Amino acid sequence: MNKRNRWEELFDELLDLIEFRLIKYPDGWGLVDRQGANLGDIESDRFDSSVTLIDRLEVYVRDYIVSDIEEDCDCGEYHDWSELLEFAKETMAPEDLERYHFDLEILDMICNHPSEVNLENCFFDREER
Image (cartoon, rainbow, N blue to C red; front, side, top):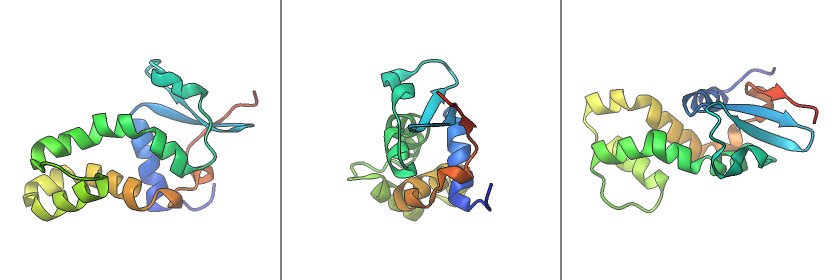
């Protein structure tokens, strides 16, 4: 494994949080739902990059991260998660910024650095089938 960057480490932490395992298949990257739910048949999807994989995880990111920030931040309407991220950074009290530090870092990775996640540098299992 090459030297990992900050975004790759955060990506691994995100997958751990939402209980997925990254799998490298002969026909691309995939996910295994450690909870066994396989919602939307996500386990059959194959991805060619971190950008497409992260995009597919949108519903999980919303459930595990974004909804809490929205609720505590009382941000009202926003166009995308980048706008939410900036609003939260600008308006949250210092103690809330500390409490949501990890969540805001994940959002930063998703919004601003998804292409900097090299899946080869992340934790994954290999499947030959």
